[in-house]
Image 1: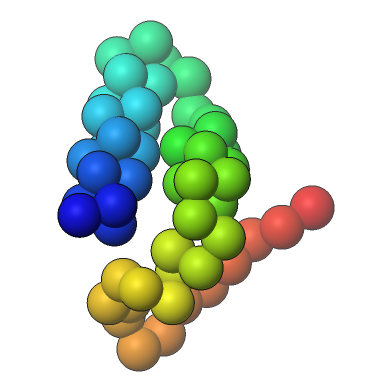
Image 2: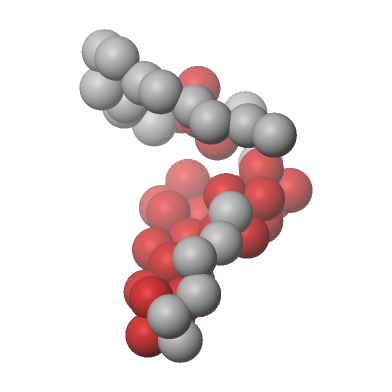
Length: 53
């Protein structure tokens, strides 16, 4: 249940960011604050590219 809530919340935040024409990593940061292991709980594509600074 918690995983579904986090996914819905981050998708909503992403869409709000698009409406405001602001790209952000904030949805991902919030998801990781709510559950540090969220990435291990969701199904990801075989190849993932992560860009960091």
